[in-house]
Length: 277
Image (tube, rainbow, N blue to C red; front, side):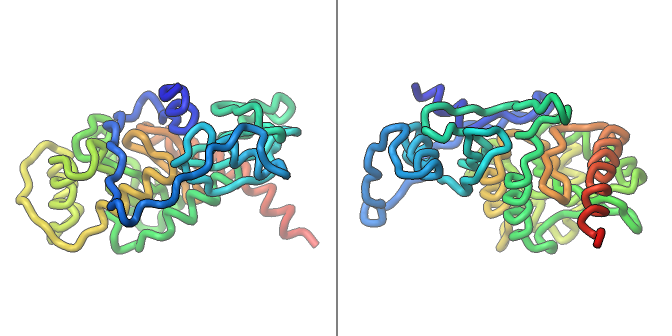
């Protein structure tokens, strides 16, 4: 059962991403420990929303439910828990995670969840612009957020192509995600990068395997790691559009531009319809 629970609530990212090391549960002071959560049975609750919440609590009492609403699939609620999107039947009995394909629209409705995208966008927006490491061309057409690590091979490959990504009209805003976990050497090295006088140079050097001076200061690395976990990042790199859509793990510059163009093309008719009198 523990493996099933983990799989249901902590989905994996693209296979082209470097996996995150398992994180130990956070230690809590005994005095601050919350009261035990009552054991709820699936289906318990007066409304579909309550039954969805009780189903998640039955699977994992520690899982935080951030959103419950109607799903595009009739008879199901859309739930965001632990940064992951789930569909739970209105009676609280069935749970789905993964892909749900609308054959008429030819799209994955879970991947294109507006609620999940909005949730991610709001969380990422809590990080001040000055705490990001930004590589941007003049007059960028698109901006992406990339949760990155300095040890991950695919993160290094993506950064090797940062100049070409910029030439494609894409600005990259890096956020720290030390995939080996808080307190690891990876975490300490990323603090050194974010505390460097020239963060961009330090990040480039670190991704090239060069040694960088050890530094410490007031830094956003832990905060950014926490936000990454809450939006569902479990591997690096993790690329998100400005609208909160996860574009994948590593993508070549031309493929990244093509995905952004595709998103823009889909958004244009909707925007035009909204502007019509």
